[in-house]
Structure formats: C-alpha cells, structure tokens
Image 1: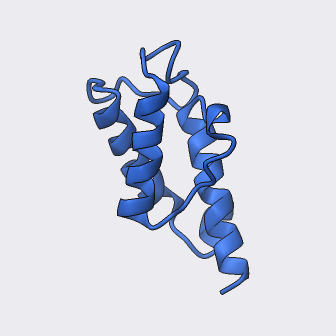
Image 2: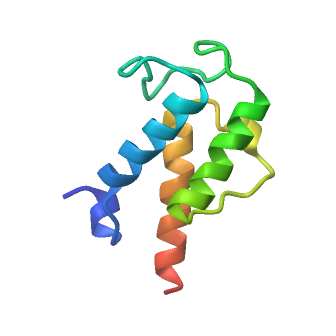
Length: 94
C-alpha cells in the first residue's frame, strides 16, 4: 500500500485524472507524457496552459492549489506532489 493510500486517498485515481488533464491541455499524444518531462521545455507548454491545468484540477478533482508557486510545477511529478500534499493536508484537518 502506498503512502498516499495510507493517507486516505487513492493516488492512482488522481495520477490518472491529472495525467489526462495535462495531456489534453498540452495537446499531447496518449503515452507521451512522463512524470519527469518539463511542461515548457519538453512539451512546448506555456504559463496559460499550466493555469488551465490547475483550474481544471480544482474544478474536476476539488483540489485547490495555491496560485503562488505555480511556476515551480514544471513536471507531472511536481504537480502530483503538490496535489498529494494538499490532499494529505485536507485529511489531517477532516
């Protein structure tokens, strides 16, 4: 069992959905997105695409990421870490 499952949420569900959102917004081919690929350097994304990704995560998954520090979310891995941190934080206060 993963740390995220121990924390009370299914990380694989979130990873799948977030990967889908990023793939759609960056207009990537299925399977092209990797955990360590840089959104801007590797996939020709831009800051507007990242804002749209974060907005969709909030709308579709109910996870609000802080607007400050978005420039640090350069890869799928960074984005997943931020979402998992918010979910863990929310569970601690539930």
